[in-house]
Image (cartoon, rainbow, N blue to C red):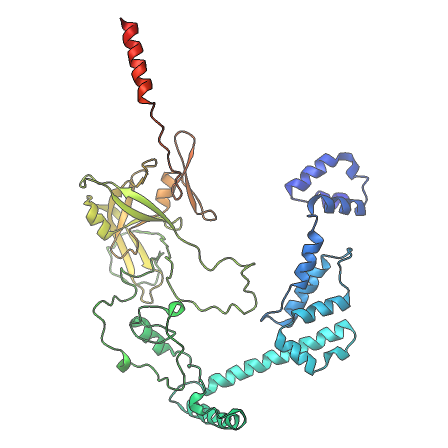
Length: 465
C-alpha cells in the first residue's frame, strides 16, 4: 500500500524525500507513512486554517445543497483530528452560514423538530427548492405583465399595481400608484438594433449617449412612463458623432475570413490568415455575480490589460524618429500599421504578391478586408538598447491602434511573452535579457575627477622629458 501510493506521487519534494528515505520505505506501515508525510509537507497551522474555512463559509445566492456539500467536504479534511466536527456541529455551522431568508423560513417551518441530521438536511433542501421555484414564478409573471409600457399587459399590471397600492396606502400611510416604481421592460430586438446603430446606451436608452451600459451615469428609468423606441424617437446626428465600428472605435479585431462571405476580389489564390486583438472597453457586458459558479477566488479575471510597447520608428524622410505605441499580440499572424502613421513616416509603399484576406470579428455585417500594401519598419526601444529586425507591416485603413506587432515580430526577434508577469523578454548579444515592457534604467558611469586626469597628463610629460 505504501509503495503504491508513494511511487505515484508527482511532487518534486515528495520524490526527493522518497529517495532520501531509501530502504526504510519498504518496512514502513501505512499509519507511519501518513504521519511522516503530514509532518513534512503540511503547514503547522493547517488544522486551524481548515477549521476556519468551514466556520467562515457562507451560502450566498447559490442553492442550499451546493453550500452544504462544500461545507461537509471541507470538514472531511479534518477527519482524524480534534477539529473534526460531528453532525451536531456541522448542523450549527450550516445554520450559521445559511442565507438569512432561508433561515427565517426554516424557523417558521420549525425544522428544529427534526433531531436527526439527514432528515433535517433534506427538509431544508426542500424548503430552499420551493422558495427558488416561487421566485422564478413571480419573475415570469412579472415579466409577462410588464411586456410593454403601452400594451395590454402594462394596463393589467397598472390595474394590479393601483389595487395593491390602494390597499397598502390604507395600511401604511397611502402610497399611490404613481409613487410605486415599475421596472423598465426588457429591450426588444428592434430597439436594441436602433440603439446600436445610433450610439445609444442599453441602460438609460438614450441615443448618442456617449457612453455604454457599465459606465452609464444616469438613473434607472421608470417603467411606468417608458415608451417603445421607434425611428421617430431618433434625434438628428450630432456634428461630432462617429458611428461605432469605424476607425475611431474601441474594438480592433480581425479574424479569419468566413467561407460564406461574398466579395469581389482578384481571382487568384490568396492566403487567409488570422489577426485578432481586443482593446479594453470593447463591449458592454452584464454578468450576474450572484449566480452559482462565479467566484473571484476561483475564476480567472474577466479581462487583462493589453501589452503595449512604447518604441521609436525611424524614417529616412524624417529628422527624428516617431514615438508610437505598438500592441504586442501573439494571436496575430501578421504585423499591421495604421494608414495615417504610414503616411507620417513617408515610407515607400510596396505591394505584396498575394492578398491578405481577413474579416472583422465584431461586425454584424460580413465585412471582408483585402490587404496588399505594406511598408518596411524597424522599431527601436526608447533607450536604444533593442532594435528589431526589419518588419513588413500591412497597411490597414481602420486600425484602432498605431501598430500591431504580431508573430513575425516575436518570432524573428526570438521574443518570449509572459502574460502572467506582463513581460516581453529579448535575448541580447551579451547573454543578458532585456524586457521591452519594463526596461531597466541605465546608470551612466561616473567620469574620473579632473584633478586625477590632469595629474596623469603631467606625470606623462615629466616621464617624456
